[in-house]
Image 1 (cartoon, rainbow, N blue to C red):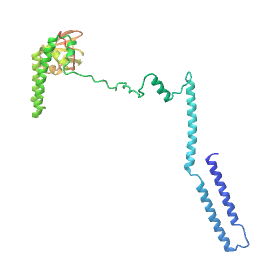
Image 2: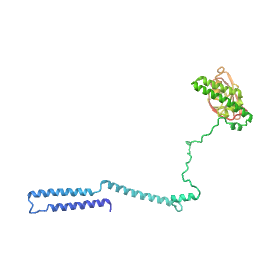
Image 3: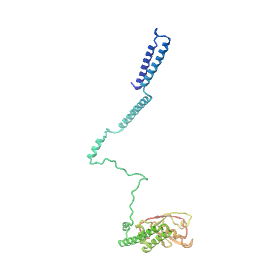
Image 4: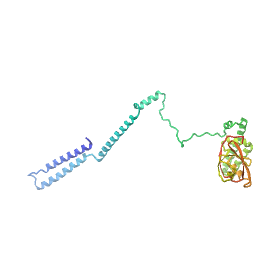
Length: 302
């Protein structure tokens, strides 16, 4: 019998008892006078009120009925889940084994695996972080792979150390003087770089830039069709080697070179394309190209 049915029976029984008591109190008696009848009626009302209050006290609150309803819904849901699980297990081929934690731990121990902590898996996809590549200050091994001799590499590295220390002292002095952001400071750094290039020469300077991870190639990323470069026959992907006979290593060098001399004056432009060097004639000034710096192994054939 459910809780609701028990509660209903209790209320009915209590009401019946209260009715019998009230009937007994109101039974006619020759000894009761007129004013006694009023007193008896008053006592009947008090007795009925007491019975009703006791009946209400024994009646479960609405929360009990709500809980009973939720329990019934939970039982129905559980039965549905058990039926779904049974169907899923029936679809699997072969007997279904229950993998208890204690059995799994024992099997792992027998295989010699003692660490049960799940191992973190590396992220997958385009948002995964790649391992950061360690960059050397001066990559001597890269020059060895490029085919340079030991004496050439030794000379380039020695010069690099000298000029690097010179730049470090210059930076320290400018920082102490508060001129590290001044135009004079950057001009002094540029002068040191020009000095390195003049001392090493084009081929060794190319290797120097490569070993220190700096850009040493200028690629034409895009060429405007109706432009001096487009009319001359330059294409996207061409690698600029020389402009006006001067070797080009960085987009800044190239832009400065195009701004020298008379505007529109014809000058030579050498590019590397498909394994060979091609020479074009262009006018000084804007060419209508988009430049892209790159790092490439030194090539003495350029």
